[in-house]
Amino acid sequence: MEDLALSRRSFLAATSAVAMTALGAGTFANVMGQDRLRVGVVGCGGRGTGAAFDCLNADPAVTVVALGDMFADRAAGARKSLTDNFKERVQITDDHVFTGFDAYKGVLASDIDLVILATPPGFRPYHFEAAINAGKHVFMEKPVATDAPGVRRVIAAAQAAKAKNLSVVAGTQRRHETAYNEVMKRIHDGAIGDIVSASCYWNQGSLWSVPRQEGWSDVEWQLKNWLYFTYLSGDHICEQHIHNIDVVNWAKKAHPVKAVALGGREVRKAEVYGHIFDHFAVEFEYEDGCLMHSYCRQIDGCANNVSERLVGTKGRANPANRIFGENEYRFSGENLNPYMLEHRHLIESIRGTRAYLNEGEQVAHSTLTAIMGRMAAYTGTSVTWDAAMASEETLMPADLAFGSRAVPAVAVPGVTKLV
Image 1: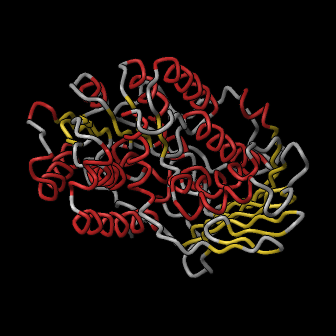
Image 2: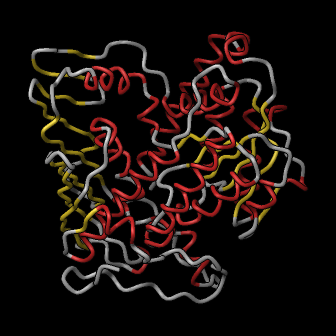
């Protein structure tokens, strides 16, 4: 079963391509400039390939010249898909297709201006740091880490990027969506007054899984089912629900300072689901006392809801498109594909036709918000922001290699300890 977000990305990518055809490439070239931008992709699964499509749709001067993935078949599939759809704008020679754990090094050593980082999130801190050290502009998928040491590494690299004037955009595409931005501008201008409570949701059914094949090592099987292993994905509160958590942080212009939570593994108990939970409910508290109630679930047969709600002293808002109360507003304009827009905005930042963009720290803070919620649910304790940020619990091994790797025990609230 395909990820709900990937389905939306595929639909929007298709509509974006139609829009570009209708307007004509020249229209976009005049706006965006003629200078060629050479792009490499690290992580050639659905998200990495989709992000490459979005980047190519964002600016006709983009060319993709290098690919890297853990597995050769995925790199080959991405190369074929990109070439079939974009022809001469995909200029990937055989010696610029890299595989294995060090594939990112080959991509970064290529003659590229911009790199798309879309491997499982556990790798993101290392790849992002390497990209900034190599002097590359970066688009990186969310979340950007699975543990606090990774978050701290990302923040340090984001600060280094700023010093080097390297542009960084993250895959929290709602921050680039026109409707969200129009509503958020009004919220920040006081349309609903002071935000006193919030709620956010990503409740849906099960996602895809890959049955274990004969001859696969533990690590190969885990990498191909990375969603279900916390060291790779951060659990679904981090990997998926970060989108909604990020919206509330955006509205508040802040991150929570404390979390208490519950969660568990009620339905998805088979081996293929690794050791992650299938539901979370978290109460986050901001410094001003505002509470955010956060809910996420991946269980079939239940009611679905992917949304955010804000309550203020003058009204309330659905940040996706509407404000209720004395400053009533409903977005009714053109809402372009946000997956494409995030790449367009990044490219404009690189070209200097838009204010400098560096979303590294903001997405790191939203990532840590989700990690703090996971910590609270896994342990059954109240977790503060300072404790979460200072945690030395390292989930992602720096020396991961194919071979044996036991599946960690499922966390038990009240028994699992905060590290």
